[in-house]
Amino acid sequence: MNYTYLLRCRDGSLYCGWTNDLEQRLKAHNQGKGARYTRGRGPVELVYCETFDTKEEAMRREYAIKHMTRREKLRLAAGWEKQKTAE
Image 1 (tube, rainbow, N blue to C red):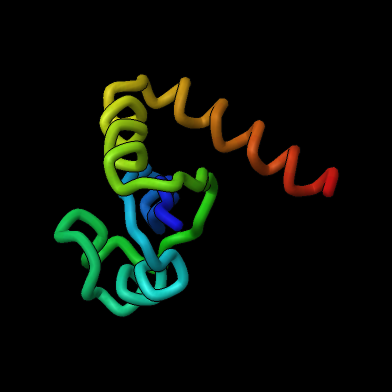
Image 2 (cartoon, rainbow, N blue to C red; image 1 turned 180 degrees about the vertical axis):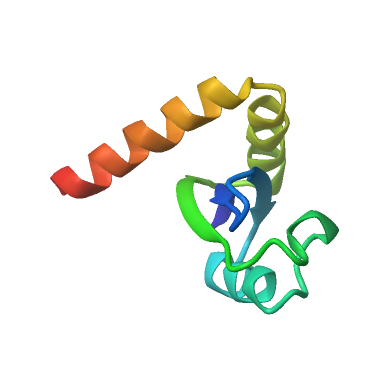
């Protein structure tokens, strides 16, 4: 599986990325070994995630999310959290 994910950093900023191992990637971000952007902004919290069959699909979704406004990203995260809670 491939994942596109959105993180909330300690400073309240949002970071979007993709990976094929979500648990390992979150661990790396929280250890300061993830993306340069998240270093020093940890701990980070997963606020949104989608799964895809291919790396290309995950990367396309990451690109689309990165071009969203902050408000749109927060709405995406809120909808995901609501869906998770309902499950």
